[in-house]
Amino acid sequence: MAVVVGAAMLGRFAAEVTGIHAKEVAGEDLFQSQAKADEVSMSEKERLWEIMVEMTQAGRKIDPAANPRDKRLLEAKYQIFLESIETQRRWREKMEQAAKTD
Image (tube, rainbow, N blue to C red):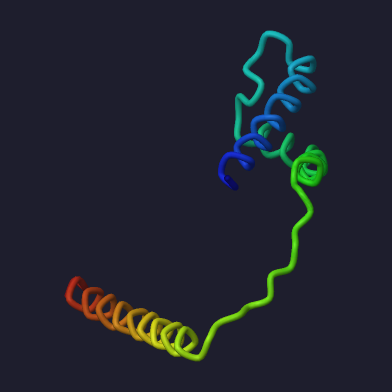
């Protein structure tokens, strides 16, 4: 659902921005350069925020709740995750060392 809503927000923003700035460059490619796209992005960023606020429902608080067994399982999964990150770093270092040219 979040992807659909996000795409709708960006689509609405793009349509509005294109409509506003198309008048400035009638007949030309609206974003003919990255510099122009960056300029428009900075000048219109508040409008994107307004659209996001308008199209997003109010959130609700959900407190975490888990029984002792679930907490143990989640803790074990987290420890395995941390170990996998460390393993990946060691492997990356080994591959970088092996790939160095003499």
